[in-house]
Image (cartoon, rainbow, N blue to C red; front, top):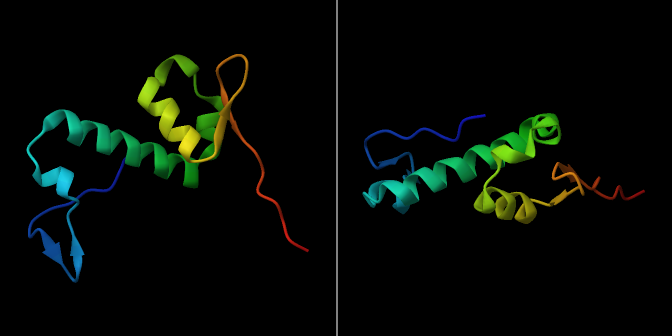
Length: 87
Protein backbone atom coordinates (compact mmCIF):
# COMPACT_ATOMS: atom_id res chain seq x y z
CA UNK A 1 0.00 0.00 0.00
CA UNK A 2 1.09 3.57 -0.48
CA UNK A 3 2.13 5.90 2.28
CA UNK A 4 0.26 9.09 3.17
CA UNK A 5 0.05 11.97 0.71
CA UNK A 6 0.53 15.58 1.77
CA UNK A 7 -0.10 18.85 -0.03
CA UNK A 8 0.12 22.55 0.68
CA UNK A 9 -0.38 24.32 3.04
CA UNK A 10 2.24 22.77 5.34
CA UNK A 11 -0.27 22.83 8.21
CA UNK A 12 -3.96 22.09 7.90
CA UNK A 13 -6.44 21.76 10.75
CA UNK A 14 -3.62 21.33 13.22
CA UNK A 15 -1.90 18.61 11.18
CA UNK A 16 1.61 19.34 10.01
CA UNK A 17 3.65 17.87 7.20
CA UNK A 18 6.52 15.74 8.59
CA UNK A 19 9.81 17.66 8.59
CA UNK A 20 11.50 15.09 6.37
CA UNK A 21 9.12 15.93 3.52
CA UNK A 22 10.08 19.60 3.51
CA UNK A 23 13.79 18.90 4.01
CA UNK A 24 14.54 18.58 0.30
CA UNK A 25 16.66 15.45 0.89
CA UNK A 26 15.33 13.09 -1.77
CA UNK A 27 16.90 9.96 -0.27
CA UNK A 28 15.40 10.57 3.16
CA UNK A 29 12.03 11.39 1.64
CA UNK A 30 12.05 8.14 -0.36
CA UNK A 31 12.98 6.15 2.74
CA UNK A 32 10.25 7.83 4.80
CA UNK A 33 7.68 7.05 2.11
CA UNK A 34 8.80 3.43 1.91
CA UNK A 35 8.66 3.05 5.71
CA UNK A 36 5.17 4.56 5.85
CA UNK A 37 4.01 2.27 3.04
CA UNK A 38 5.34 -0.75 4.96
CA UNK A 39 3.67 0.50 8.15
CA UNK A 40 0.30 0.85 6.38
CA UNK A 41 0.60 -2.49 4.64
CA UNK A 42 1.51 -4.24 7.90
CA UNK A 43 -1.47 -2.67 9.66
CA UNK A 44 -4.08 -3.06 6.93
CA UNK A 45 -2.96 -5.94 4.73
CA UNK A 46 -0.58 -8.18 6.71
CA UNK A 47 -1.32 -10.99 4.27
CA UNK A 48 0.63 -9.09 1.60
CA UNK A 49 3.75 -9.01 3.76
CA UNK A 50 3.42 -12.70 4.64
CA UNK A 51 3.18 -13.64 0.94
CA UNK A 52 5.77 -11.18 -0.33
CA UNK A 53 8.97 -12.42 -1.95
CA UNK A 54 11.71 -11.69 0.63
CA UNK A 55 14.05 -10.39 -2.06
CA UNK A 56 11.96 -7.19 -2.39
CA UNK A 57 12.91 -6.11 1.16
CA UNK A 58 16.16 -4.25 1.66
CA UNK A 59 18.03 -4.01 4.97
CA UNK A 60 16.07 -0.92 6.09
CA UNK A 61 12.77 -2.62 5.17
CA UNK A 62 13.69 -5.62 7.33
CA UNK A 63 14.62 -3.28 10.20
CA UNK A 64 11.26 -1.49 9.90
CA UNK A 65 9.34 -4.76 9.83
CA UNK A 66 11.23 -5.89 12.92
CA UNK A 67 10.27 -2.65 14.70
CA UNK A 68 6.65 -3.31 13.72
CA UNK A 69 6.78 -6.76 15.33
CA UNK A 70 7.43 -8.94 12.27
CA UNK A 71 9.97 -11.74 12.45
CA UNK A 72 11.87 -13.41 9.60
CA UNK A 73 11.42 -17.10 8.86
CA UNK A 74 14.45 -19.21 7.87
CA UNK A 75 13.38 -18.81 4.21
CA UNK A 76 13.41 -15.00 4.60
CA UNK A 77 9.65 -14.51 4.63
CA UNK A 78 8.13 -12.54 7.49
CA UNK A 79 5.44 -13.52 9.96
CA UNK A 80 3.89 -11.68 12.85
CA UNK A 81 3.34 -13.30 16.17
CA UNK A 82 -0.35 -13.03 17.11
CA UNK A 83 -1.01 -10.48 19.81
CA UNK A 84 -1.97 -11.93 23.17
CA UNK A 85 -5.68 -11.74 23.91
CA UNK A 86 -6.59 -10.88 27.46
CA UNK A 87 -9.55 -12.78 28.83
